[in-house]
Length: 104
Image (tube, rainbow, N blue to C red; front, side, top):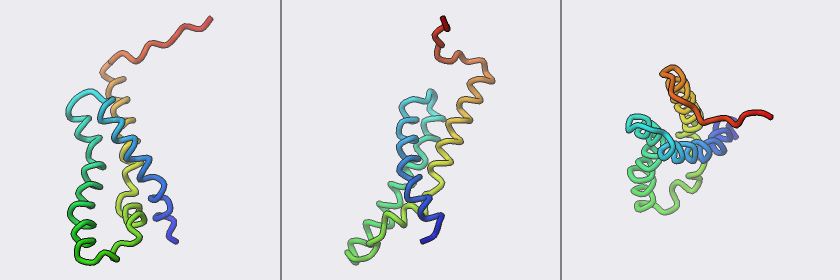
């Protein structure tokens, strides 16, 4: 089994969850659209590739979770890069962070 496929098998769900949460947590339409890119890509793959192939031959794509892992393994690094870029830009602009409780 290819190491990239194993990596993708575990990181795709994590990346998609991070992207879904980021859609609701990030402020600004541009950041939200950027966070939605992985979700849109996976949905488009299902709609335009998997479902039509399944309609032609139900036994095709029996290993589709591995296909998803191979094609979309970049969702996790993309989501992390997006969050780090958002944080860096907010800090550079001087946006206030969440208040920190004082130490006693």
